[in-house]
Length: 129
Image 1 (cartoon, helix red, strand yellow):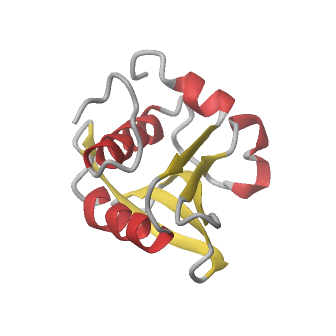
Image 2 (image 1 turned 90 degrees about the vertical axis):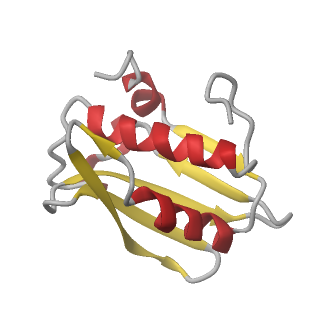
C-alpha cells in the first residue's frame, strides 16, 4: 500500500477545483494515460452523467480491470467538485473491482492530484508544483 494512503479511500475525498468542468475533464483525459504504478498504466472511461454538469468516471488498468470510480461536478462559480465516495459506500456502484487494498487507485489519485496542483486548480501541501 502507498504510505498508508488507504485512508483516502476509507474516508472519501472532495476537492473544489478552481477550473471549469470541461477543463478538468480535459486534463484528466490528457494526463491519466501517462500515470503508472507497478508497471501498469491506467485508462479512464465515462460511466454516465449529464454533459457539461456531472460526470461519473471509471478508472481501470489498461488490461481492462476496474479499480475505482470518481465524479466531477460543475459548480455555479466556475469551479468543479472532484469526489471519491468513501469505500463503505462503493457497494454495487463499483462491481468487479480487483484493487482490494486500493494501492492502484490511490496511486492514480495521487498522480491526478499532482496534476491538479501543477495546473493551479488546488493547493495541496506536500504535493508541490
